[in-house]
Length: 358
Image (cartoon, rainbow, N blue to C red; front, side, top):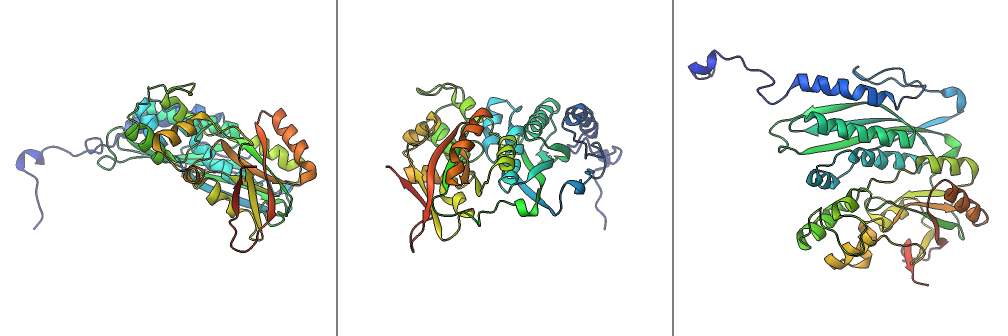
């Protein structure tokens, strides 16, 4: 027997808007972001947003054996900081950075990016700010924002909550892939400075600073130039253009994006089993925000290097004879580059990552 609503409700027509999804606001949102997205276009882009899929022409003439490289990621609980500060115009940069940096470490040029925004209720101005950040990130990486998806899901997310995910595709000539197989003993390790926490370790950072330390995002702490919130919300650095220049002009044996897992989990992904990386402590300046987290949370040093980037967002493994020229070129391009270590032979039972205080 079919169920019927109460008689008083039988006369009312149910609508999507009453259910919590406003198609009119969604359409207005698309119109607002169209001109922003257009500023990221490349010559290979064949479509605008609004279609069933983004179209991107493969320029096969410039490569003999092109290999597509893809990456997907989010920004984790850094979004919580953006919500606490009601500042949403930079979190999109983080979203792009996490994927494009993963693509470029394999020697690939990021071509296009797609985003996914999920929320309980689509707030027009906030959502436009988020996409504006994504556009900024795509410009910094030189890739096109080819499309995306915005999902309004009432009852699934709390009011004001949202989540982000991104997807990037790049391309590299097959014989130019950087995968670490030719890393050898005495190769030098260059570290590129991060802009701060980037987009990893925020669950620990929030617990230490906001819960254990009882600080607010508006508080200032001795040693920090900005408020806690601004320090944490500093956008992830995008290294794409600098690295593509270096890759084109020098022999780069390995690249490591220091993300979740810090030094201990990411370096072994590229260093061959027969080798290990010796990292010289004190060879770069650790930003004060990490010291604040460590002191307030009483966090062990190894845990810090296992969770955070500790001021080094990207690692390069290069031949000894090219090291200084690479550092000089990076400096000219605005990167803060440091010689932070060396590759040594790994003996049985030795760890692949070792910190030296010498």
